Image (cartoon, rainbow, N blue to C red; front, side, top):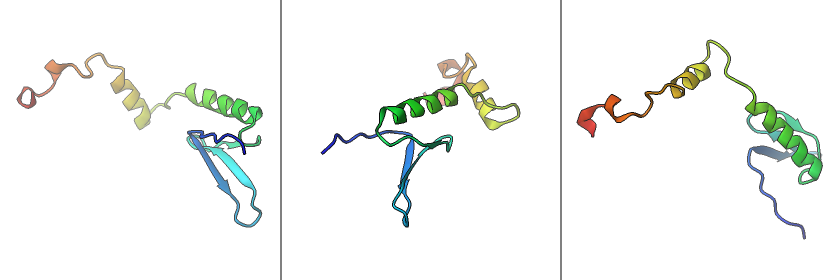
Length: 86
């Protein structure tokens, strides 16, 4: 019996009629064609995750507004919070 490997960020499902297992990168929806658990699978998964890290939010989207908010220097300073709640 082999070693049990848990991989986060993967959606894995079996086709009910054919019994074939399919794997998808959960965040991007990109299919991963290599056999699950093989070195080629982990290499393909790393390539997909690396391509996801390089993407930035598009202009005019909520993601860009959130990224800009988190990039501000005033985020989380106590003097900007409501003093009645402290």
